[in-house]
Image (cartoon, rainbow over all chains, first blue to last red; front, side, top):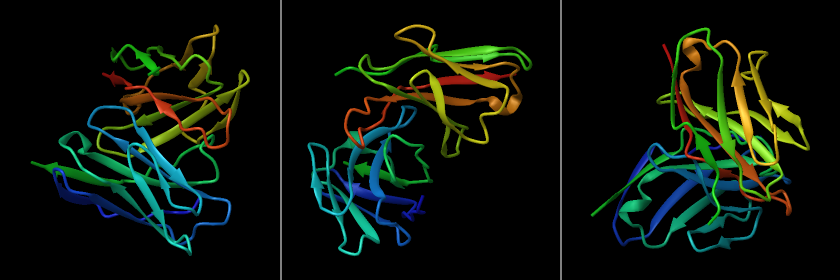
Length: 110
Length: 115
């Protein structure tokens, strides 16, 4: 699976959009970009995934660049409950072992 | 919303003892997983299970580990002879596999402490 690079941490103001970048320059054509998050002491939670088109669901939006070498997860209106570690994972399939990196620790401040 | 449940939430055991961690996956799911997270470290894949057999396992999942689906609802991870370095959070996950890229649903984990 391709390696991903994420900033170790970022802060966000409550109510503002949080934009979380991820670089995956070695992604191959059949690999998807997945985002999970882990709120303190809980199990990872699926957020969203995409192949090459932008995706949106009730939790977030995923913007993938045209060359697929990077992506951005957007939390449109961050709340204090969005404080978590966010993981960007590249994998051929979700029904497959997921390689979690260190992720980005996002702190939402009031 | 249905969820993956794990018991116990915290297990303390002595080195060399056997432990069984239990999971009840979401009822219509077909794919099952165990991951672990040593304190302060990354979440690591251990094993995936489908159609009553292991489909993939990591190098961590050695002969001391085994998984079983003893009935239609439970999925267990057994560690035969625990070591200090087995202390970690163990997460069970499941997915329905009914469509490509069905998301994994994780439980909230069992914290295993080996003394």
